[in-house]
Length: 239
Image (cartoon, rainbow, N blue to C red; front, side, top):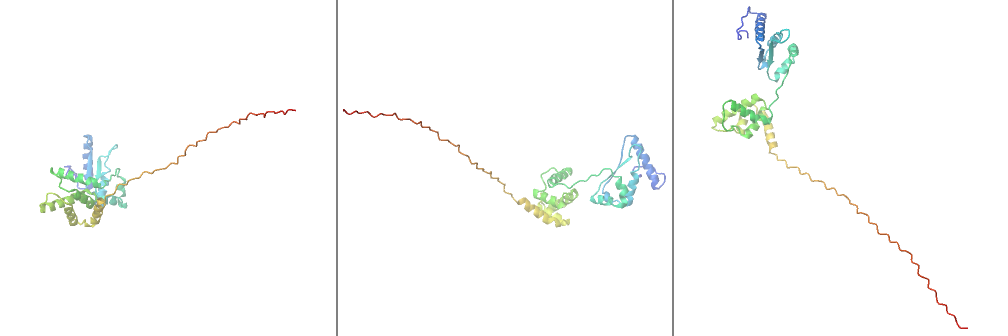
């Protein structure tokens, strides 16, 4: 690292190299710069290399760190850092972030972006069914998506086809040893082919018992009419 930065090291020991790097970082800080060490595929680092990173993380002033260290790797990196022998460097990790797999709906746009970045401006090279197969075989892992697409494009080129089909994706997956996921592909295809009939909800008809209004019969009062008393005529017989 010191040689790549053009630093003059007085001696060949590790301490002298760290001292030279410390002086370089202080000079950068005075200029308003920040030193960043970015390591990709960090899961492949040996324990000795990780221990050296721990020493580099001690480079600091009274107010701030001189070097920001970023480790990027596969899930195996997390497993390695959980080892008891590396607990000191694990304790120095301030921020953790995990990138999740791409969702199935994101695989198509990802492939289109990669083709665009490579300079392709034509029509879609992958059929819709091919994209579905890529999503299943790759499990949404960008690296596997790239490898599957690269192999499928070679198959399409060899067969003089202008579009990558689902069968080409399956062939590429077999060549890469991903055929164990074939049942999942078939299950996903079968699931997508199912057409679920729309659920029609029949509204409930609630019959309300309507009570007919009670109609009272009119009360008729019959007044008692007294018939007039008729006196019978008095007949007197002659004496």
